[in-house]
View 1 (cartoon, rainbow, N blue to C red):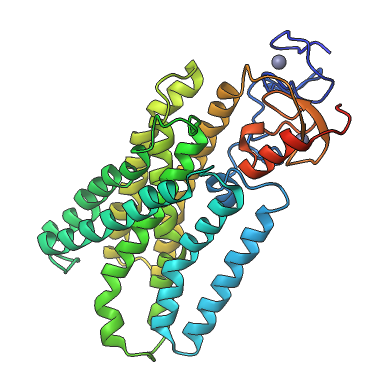
View 2 (view 1 turned 90 degrees about the vertical axis):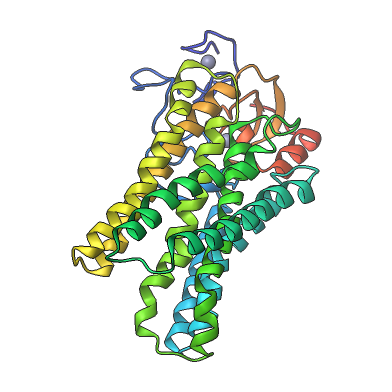
Length: 369
Ligand SMILES: [Zn+2]
Ligand SMILES: [Zn+2]
């Protein structure tokens, strides 16, 4: 068939395999296809979903396994708190997201043939930066936040800006390396660095608590810090690192992806200030901790949605002009003849797990659509 949008002769299907445009009469915004996120076509681009955004190579079937694993982790943390094992709960909360993410890196083989280099530079780099930053910040700003205006500005404005600059650096060290040319590589490496940073920051911040609490402690006051440690802080640092690394990853982009990339640092800055400064102001004004916690999910969601728009348009941009190959689609499992996108479900071939992509291109012998 002939694509309605790029005019190329392409295999029959709901999506053009070359440009990714949604085919058919009456399809609104066919070229931008906002209802079919390029890394996960079942979702709208603007849906702030954590797992399909930060784990872009995970396939349709596998994403639930990560969701369940996270929920099991949360259940274990709740159980530990309920039985008074607060220190164990804190440690579990600190490591839950980073460990899941390392499993994802292994599952999807995002690092291709260089696991030690990629994980070493990004995760370990983030850890080291996190330890140094948090200790130095503690020395300079002092350990007390609250009424003191200097400490307030230090912890909720200066420190978040310093973190925002430092977190993407380990990922950006891999920028321009052969084998990792795509925006989603930058995203994943940035998230890894951010999670390394969040582990280190949380351990340093709670190290005094670990010693003084003893193994058993009263649990009621720990619920809010635990939610922050297990979800909000790793998500903020991970998506900050991911957004900035993804935005800076490629020197050349088309107009749309380029415009989105320019927004990376301003959006991350806005989200970090909203997360720390505004939340502290709300807390000081006497708002209930639960409300503050719910409010803090908003800047994280903003970052996630930004990442999705950037990655979506980057995939539509970068997947053009790939050669035709017979593949088994990792998302819908059909045997298809695909260039950049699966003609049946519209997933970007580059958002497939590396291992699956390699196996599919070498082993696919089934008839193509
Ligand atoms: Zn087309
Ligand atoms: Zn498909």
